[in-house]
Amino acid sequence: MPTAKKKIIYIITKGNWGGAQRYVFDLATALPQENFDVVVACSESKKTEGGLPGILVQKLLELGIKVIPIHSFTRDISILKEFSALRELYSVIKITNPDVVHLNSSKAGGIGAFAARVCRTKEIIFTVHGLPWDEDRNILSRTLIFLSSYLTFLLCHKVILISKNNFERIRRLPFCGRKAVLIHNGVAPIDFRPREEAQREIMGTPIRKTPWVGVIAEFTKNKGLLYLIESAAILKKHGVAFRMSIIGDGDMLPEVKKRAIEYGLYNSPNSPVYIDLPGFVSDVATNLKAFDMLVLPSTKEGLPYVLLEAGLASLPVIATSVGGIPDIIQNGKTGLIVPPGDSQRLAEEMQKLLGQPNMQAELGTTLRKHVEREFSFEAMLQKTFALYASARE
Image (cartoon, rainbow, N blue to C red):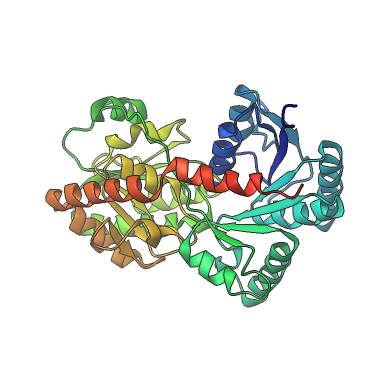
């Protein structure tokens, strides 16, 4: 008799597009359909214009993956909304009766783990995309977040950590040693557009003379974009000339734009430093060769896909020493590392790298080899699917 398909439900809070959403999309669409039934539960993340669902939802539906909306999922904390989301998730898990519940993001993790335990789900897996108590908050908030996260770990059967730093910290917690599993994010080969074609895709015209710095990030506080703007302002004072495109969308976009205008960096073609904000660009990874270097000034991270993609594009990278970034960027070897929130140091490293084309080429080549060797997409899939295969019968 044929083996019954294993049912997997992925649960994530937001249905927009970011690292955690990319992770869910990659796993959900890579599972062999002959062996798995796949469902994704998340908020619809409707946009204000046109009422379209979030990018994750759109992409999944286009490929025929079933998506169940969790209407009560919101980013902000609301006791009534949390109880409502718990009821929704309980109902979804009870009806779908999955073999595996795979949780992503802190809110979905806590509520989903409790609902799955009540439903007696065979295997509950939680992927931690960066430890939430590492965020810049007051001590009381961080303590409460830590306690709620620890409870989530206890409710799950396995906890996937995507960086060495997070893995070492979690496996030392009481009763978490055997739950913790290190599985790095992986990236598949990318068909990159040639440089001038990629530049036209992003800006409509090639940029022939001025060095072009790329930044790809969701506009949230954790991405450190205000520090980046301050670094650009420092370089402007020193007469360093370059163009910078900060690609993405999010709640902080108006504030970042306002700060860039205040420094005379946005919409100022006569300034030596010119910043543009193209917004969200679909399949931006294929256009990475448009840039001369990539910068990621995050104050909190998991293990960012954009650095893996930059590596495959042989781009030199400057990033901060947070989360899983040191797993990818080894200072002076595969890129340059700066402390988070240090605008002066970031400006200094950008100026140094912009002025040394040979260093750019060397760092980019070394990073590409490191990513190809250590962050294989197939390895990530095999290790994750092995956890599904070992789910309790």
